Length: 241
Image 1 (cartoon, helix red, strand yellow):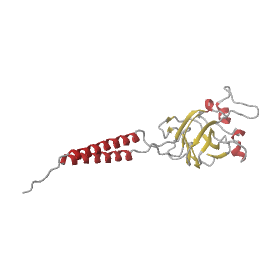
Image 2: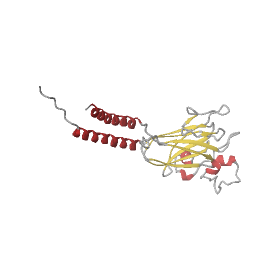
Image 3: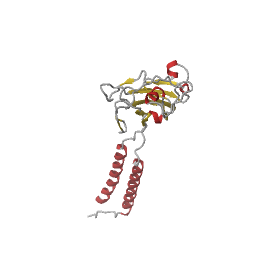
Image 4: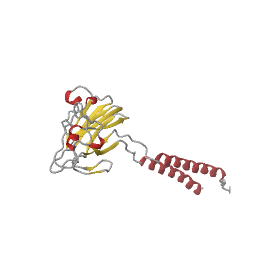
């Protein structure tokens, strides 16, 4: 019987250990999207005034003045959204991407799926915590979009201070284009980099569900064997004197 009791305790201990391991698995965090590139090659907004479209022959200064790179994204669950740049001072993104310093002074604008203006870094945070300085200047920015409802959104990146007509005039949409007020400072390039931080969504760590299922099966098998062993165990009777 001592062996049978040990057998039962083994099953209980195995189940407890499985629960500790499964519960102790940290949730996988989802929601950081990283973007980087060159405004000349990545820009999809190329209008440079009436009847004008930017082309390969245009200077970096022309591109910085007018061009905009566009990032479309979808929020699946309501929550806070931020965008953090590494364009000017460089640094390491939230996902571990190493970004070189010396890019453009970034300007971010946020629109809904219809192109209606929502917010920008005009009133955003310049030189957010952790941003790097270059030549004594810190021009990277943080756009705090607040809590966004589920849906599709558009984030644009331009050189400072090429804001949209929708923001500048307080009317219209992204389709109306940009003001052409952007510029490059001495030594700056058209390189950019930023993180788009979406609402965190806890998701099961890959394999934790399978681990927990396997543990339950093992514990159940031990329990059945324990019950069978009890049925087959001889009953000890004491002799009467």
